[in-house]
Length: 376
Image 1: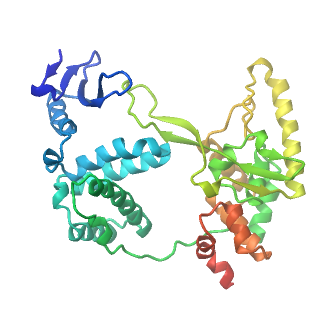
Image 2 (image 1 turned 180 degrees about the horizontal axis):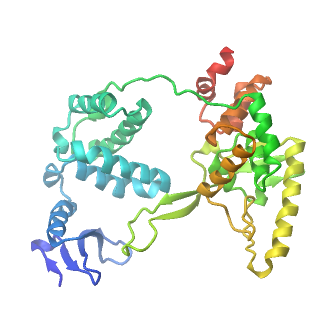
Image 3 (image 1 turned 120 degrees about the vertical axis):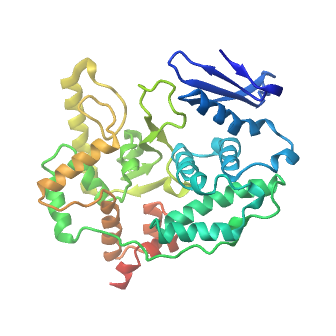
């Protein structure tokens, strides 16, 4: 039976599966004129009451009442209200984990108006020195926090953004691992012994990311112009909403646009790759004949024998099999992308062209990433 709090702050009801649903009215649906509610779930009644107390602040819409909000509550509200509709699912999940894993446990109970640059500086120093967080991770945390606090400044809840005045730790540039020419040749030779070896060769000569490779469709290949177009990625991500049924999967395949506008690009293909792709078409035709009515016309380039897409984890297993066939040690799949960039630079490709092909945000980023090659 639902328990309603005073002033319609929210209610708790026990579900058929034994869990408790906590519902709070956050605003009005402007299309229907009816209240809009959000729901969260708890395993016990005590947890549900605590959760309801934490969620009820959303009903307080006046700035005077909002001054009591904690940093943790503000970050959750900001993510769902101001950011969610503009973020890719992968970015939303990253921000949600920043709040849940990093900010709420340590800083979540601090009143928003009492957060200072000094507090943040001590926190980031601790993360770097005692938890060993990489400088890039700390920079990403502060980037999200800065954005969320900018909304608080704009709404008048704080006068300035404390995340603007911190001194972030600087670390050594991460080492770029690539295959040397002998290892690359052994991998190419081994790739001819595996069904999916053609895609290893494609990455070595295009620098594609794994998600970009798996998201390719035949419509993205221009055989006449000898170009490949990157228009989408395929990834397995956590669902943005926790399933109500504990037996439901918590992840899903997500097909979305690439990580940035620069990642939407075209890449020239050498004649050998064109020939490899034409040969792969014949493999898919044979799959279609063998599978018959069970074949799925998905349109993807990378497909299983039944025409369906191949998941990232499954493809990494195939990649590791090819490494083993070549007698090679383990290299991350991303090392193939770095290997392409290194070989292209060694062969005289200019940084501007390489930056565009790699889908980087700027030429300076490309030069910083592969400066060791320029030094050599």
